[in-house]
Image (cartoon, rainbow, N blue to C red):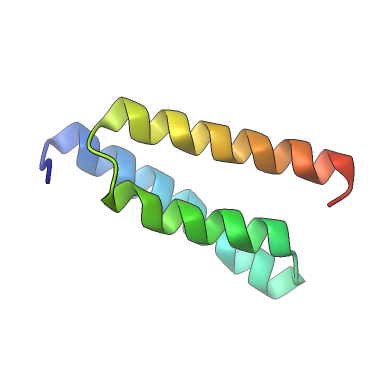
Length: 72
C-alpha cells in the first residue's frame, strides 16, 4: 500500500467524482453513470500511483462521455 500524499489526494479526488456520478446515476436511474461511479469509488484502492489513478479516472470519464453521446 502506498501512503504517499499525492496518491491519497488523487484517490480522494477520483472517489469524490465517483460518488457524485453514483448518486446522480441512482437518482436519475442512469445505469452508465451508476456503473462508472461505483468503479471510480473502488479502483483507487488497488492502483499504486497518483498519475495512474488520475489517468484511469480520466479514461473512465471519457468513456462515459462517449457512451452518453452514443445514446446509452
